[in-house]
Image (cartoon, rainbow, N blue to C red; front, side, top):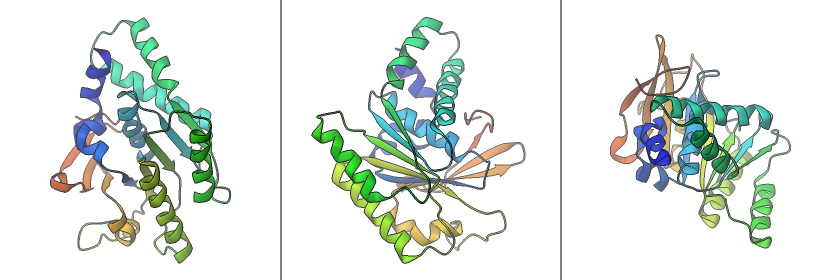
Length: 233
């Protein structure tokens, strides 16, 4: 079955494990700018789509047409990785899972937890199928987060809990910031206790090293990724 074959090739699933990945309700992917946070988050979201679940992708940086291209490219990268697949079969599956993806573009000034909560309530009012997973890409986790930011993060955590939806973030790090004693980049050190899962993408010569910062028994495990595709070497 194509869904199963693609799931076996998913870098997010191979790194974290399907069951383990889906148990985490509050996760983040960290890296410097341009390393691949959004690309990896797309693979995380695809793991839900391939299971037949709905996802919601919120972008605070890029327009949704650009994000939609990333999903399609990631999907067909997985298709290419398993060898020959009937093109019509691959296209039909893409069309099926693409219908399960909803995207919204915000910016830092217009995005608010209250708006997100109201939006999710609208699913219930209209008796629509709820997303099982959400991506919030582009929220600014600074090295000195204010009380208001942390309060909003806690509100998002409450939304994740109240609606039983997994919520994954991108978190930008900086080249010159030293790591904490636990090996955490500065932004994550501040909010670490709020998160169940965290993956740090770090450039390593012509590859990307994916380090699991937080994920139970998988913590501290490392994987090498192709920077162009995010596939595991």
